Amino acid sequence: MGRQPCCDKLGVKKGPWTAEEDKKLISFILTNGQCCWRAVPKLAGLKRCGKSCRLRWTNYLRPDLKRGLLSDAEEKLVIDLHSRLGNRWSKIAARLPGRTDNEIKNHWNTHIKKKLLKMGIDPVTHEPLKKEANLSDQPTTESDQNKENGHQQVQVVPQSTNVTAAAATSTEFDNNSSFSSSASSSENSSCTTDESKLVFDNLSENDPLLSCLLEADTPLIDSPWEFPMSSTTTVEEPKSFDSIISNMTSWEDTFNWLSGYQEFGINDFGFDNCFNHVELDIFKTIDNVENRHG
DNA sequence: AAACCTCTCAACCGCGTCGGG
DNA sequence: GCCCGACGCGGTTGAGAGGTT
Image 1 (cartoon, rainbow, N blue to C red):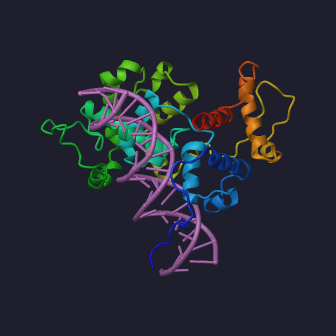
Image 2 (image 1 turned 90 degrees about the vertical axis):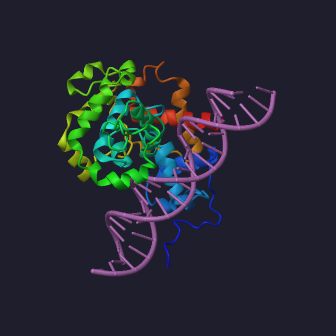
């Protein structure tokens, strides 16, 4: 007997998510947290398969997601990590907070691959393309290449620096980036402080990075969303996000509470220091959901 | 303005892995 | 040790947006 489908195919909705579905899912997860995805659709009142809910949440609705294109530094980090890890997108994504494996995979296939080819670098092996290899003579498919090179991917740690260096010397990368493969040049980075720190922390690691990535995942921001004690006020006790949300009886309450901060303009009130990036991203997420669905 | 082409990315599919019984 | 269910991952697809002719 074959494997059972992950969900009952009959009556399960597919395709793009509606605003209503997004609201239900966000509301459910904010209230109950992430557990047992198979049960989520039923409990949340969604006609979706659990897998689809998980994907929607992790790739799109999670409040700690960054939006927009990858920065130059992030792009270079992806290249570097890819040279070490191959197509292990989730491992790569774990090193880029706020980015999903799907996002990185898409960005790799649509942007980075082309850039590398343009630069004369084989996106699969990260070696310079052979002279006799015509550009049109590209790898048939990535999966084919991975089959051939999959084992090699893990063994190429020393060469990864070549790729990074090659990228750093490329005209294309130099134009808009002050990034250097040297960990000591972080003052030149154009990304945010935290981001820079992370990126350069990663690049400053050599073999430990590989072993770390292969053996133990560095946790992403998947820990419960708790409001840390504000750096600017000592009046209020820190409240956990869950406790706040659980006191709200409906999605409307939650939604209004979250979006209220945006409408007020937290920066205008000098509240911007009261929220960490996770909370700020929640506001962005709410805004995005509203905007995307009109 | 319309038809066609290209690109992007959200979503799906199937398989591998893991953990509980 | 085996089986089964659930989750997570990587590859692929396809709708829609944007660009070109």
